[in-house]
Length: 317
Ligand SMILES: [Zn+2]
Image (cartoon, rainbow, N blue to C red):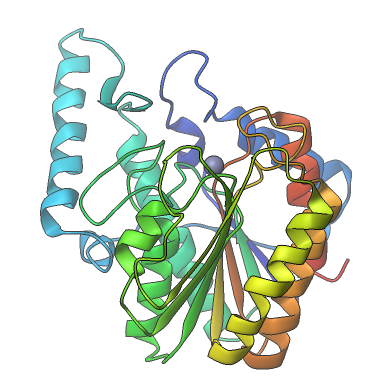
C-alpha cells in the first residue's frame, strides 16, 4: 500500500484567467515535472479527481452562490459561442473561462475523494494538486483567484459523511484564508490555525472572530526560524488540546522567500518542517489522516521544490 495519494485532474489545467495571470496552468506543470524527475511520483498512489456535486458545494456555500457561479459560466459559454471574449471577470483579480466550472468541481471533488480514500484506509494521507485554489472563497463570494472553498468543503464533508467530531484546518499560505474563516468560524467541530503576512491581501485576520480561530499575523520579511517559533507557540498547543480526528491543509507556498507574490522568508526546508509538525499531531491524534490541498505559490521553481519537500514528508521519503 502506498501511504500517500496524489489527486488531480486534467480539467484543472484548462481553467485560465487571462494572459499573464499568476494563477496559471503552468503551476501544475512545474509541480508534476519536479515530482517526475525527482522520482517522488513513483511513491504516490495517483487518483483522478471526480467532480463534486452541487449539493457537496453547499456543505460550505449558500445555494445562491453555487447558482450564481453556474449562471456566470453558462452565460460565458453562450457569449463565447457568439464570438465574445474568452474571459469573464468576477472581481478585479479573478476571472472565469469556459473550463472554470469543471475545474472548480474537480478541485472540490479532489478534497472529498481524498477524504474518502484516507477514511477508507486506502492511503494514510493525500496531496491534491488542484486549481482553482479555494481559501479566499467565502460562503457567498468568489474572490482572490478562488470560486469554491475546497478545504472547507472537504472539512465539512468529513464531519458530515464520517460523523467526525473534530477536524483541524491548517493554513500556511502567505495570504490569510479569509474564506475558510468565514465558513468555519463558530463551528466548534473545526479548529483553524493559520499564519499569514499582515497587513497584506485580504487585509483582515488580525483578530480572531471566534474561539475556534487561531490567526497568527506576521509582518513582511519575517524569516523562517521566527515563523517556526510562532507556530510552535501558537498552533501546536491548540492542536494538541483540540485533538483533531483528521487534519486538512491549505497548502500555499507563496510565502517562499523567492516568491514575489508575498514578502515572507520561508524556504522549502521550512515547509518540510511545518509539514512534519502537522504530521506529528496527525500521528498522535488523527491516525495519521491528512488531506492537503494546493492553494498559492506563483514562482515556478520554488513552488515545485516546496511541493516536493511537502510531499516527501507526507510520504516519508
Ligand atoms: Zn496566497
